[in-house]
Length: 173
Image (cartoon, rainbow, N blue to C red; front, top):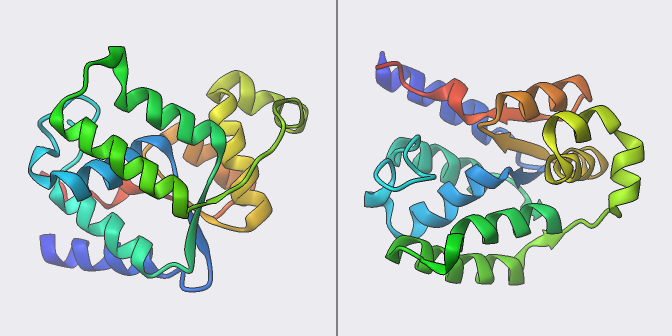
C-alpha cells in the first residue's frame, strides 16, 4: 500500500510538463537542504517535518515541470530562515550557498507591495505579504504552487491557482 500511495503521489505531483512550479518557503528549504544534506531531513529545526521521501517526491515533480519561478518576498523569507541569528548549522550554510545559486538561475516575479495589498487584502491579513506575492505570481504565470501550508493551499484553490499540498501525499504511519 505504501508503494501504491507513493506512486500516485509521484504521478499527481509530476503531471505539469508545460507548467512552471513555484515552491513555497518551507518547500524551498526542503529542496535546498535536501540537496545539500538529505540525511539531515527530519533532524534539524525547520526540516523536522520532512523526510527523504518528501525530498524525492518534490525533486521528481520539479524535474518534470517546465521551470521554476519565485518572488523576492519568498527568497527573502528563505534567506532569513537560513541565517537565523547569524548562527548557521553546516546544513544551513550549505543551503545558503545553494540558495545563492538558485537565485542566479530562477525566474523571479516582482509585484509592488501596494499592488499585492490592494489585490488581496484578506490574504494579506491572514497569510502575510510573502504569501500574497506567491499567490499573485502563481496566478499571473499560471504556475503550480507546491506548499505544506494548509491556509496558503486553501487560498490558492479559492483563487483557481493550481496548487499541491505536499502533506497530502505523505505515507500514513
